[in-house]
Image (cartoon, rainbow, N blue to C red):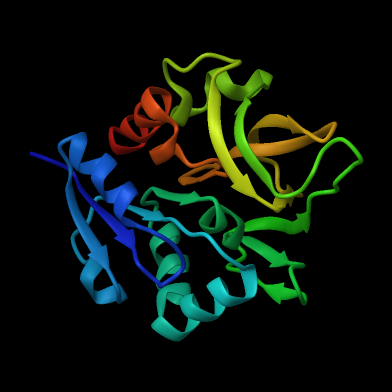
Length: 206
């Protein structure tokens, strides 16, 4: 039976490329604009681009904030991508301090630019970290693989997580994390060609 993957559409980014990548893997897709549409799905993806305050406001208004907390507590797999990954943390500092979903303890902070390294971070970067080999998202993905990033803020978790990193502006930036059934990817797997498709396949097959 094909897995059913719910992709949350809360008006914070292009969800169609994520949906197309999942369809290419043979998944059935539910593009959900309200929590009730996610009944019966096997897994949920929270994508997103844009600002932390706006994204969080939309999740609360549409009822997804309480849904996601209950969904994670049920033990079902959740993957946050880019802004979606950031919204899973306790708080964000963009514009004003904003409370996040609190599924991962920590904060979202602005990347620091340097003379030779500008923010936002846009482009391909390699990932590294000793915990990569034990992280379910990275099965058959090698240390040093490159993924496509677009972001100005990054997560600073204080939970005990499994984490892999990338290097940008001489900073070790969290590229992906895992806490039990909660997974995050700062990069865009749907835009990262074959290695990104492999990562999504690993999530679908959890």
